[in-house]
Length: 87
Image (cartoon, rainbow, N blue to C red; front, side):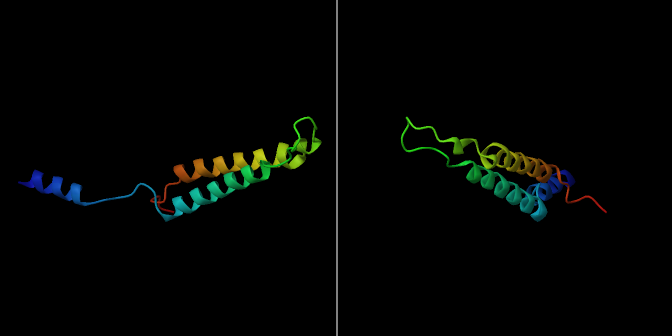
């Protein structure tokens, strides 16, 4: 009888792995990744026979990939963050 009651208690209690703080960091990471991809767009030419050197700008070569990597780092941190840890 006691074993059946414990199984019912475990089945009735729903706990989430992540909490509000985890989701906030995840949204921040997604925002960084999206901003990085937005910064990477453009620089093309309408005519394929004309070369546009704007494709090699500092924003597209350095800044945008750095933003994407920072976003992925924030995502890893959000997943590994333990909100139940006592301070």
